[in-house]
Image 1: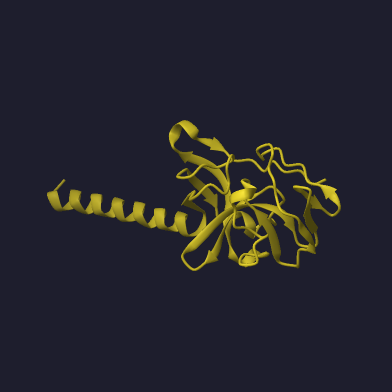
Image 2 (image 1 turned 180 degrees about the vertical axis):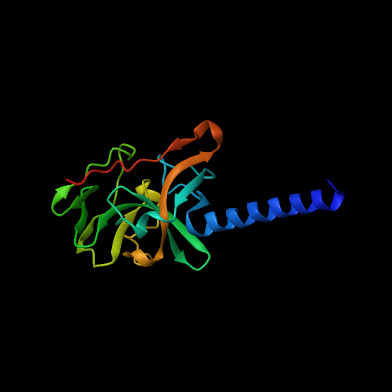
Length: 177
């Protein structure tokens, strides 16, 4: 095998690998870094997540999903879906009520205090999202965020892979009442 032939084989292999990696990142999976404390105790700052970008092409977001969405150009948020279109959500006495019944949220730290939020219906094509660390989360309760359009969803988080000793699969733990 000539030197040029071997060089061409290496170049071709590297190009195929780069193209495959770009296609996977564009259409299937993407890595996101958790910034801030709004999803504690479920997610910690600086953890790396794998996000399934394809899932919502075949399925609707569900209560309990941890989603990544574009808050504004160049700025993504990671939050949990608390209510979907048609649901009536309210917060009173530091509890989230969905369609009049308390939402079961086993992922929350105890003694989670929240301000009341008057009952509102989630419009079609939108979600109501919240961080798990409710006292330190800019989420749908904040008028700057409000209901999140499903158009802005980048995908559903399904795996924490960094740091390696914290690697785990992310499950949707909330239960509709």
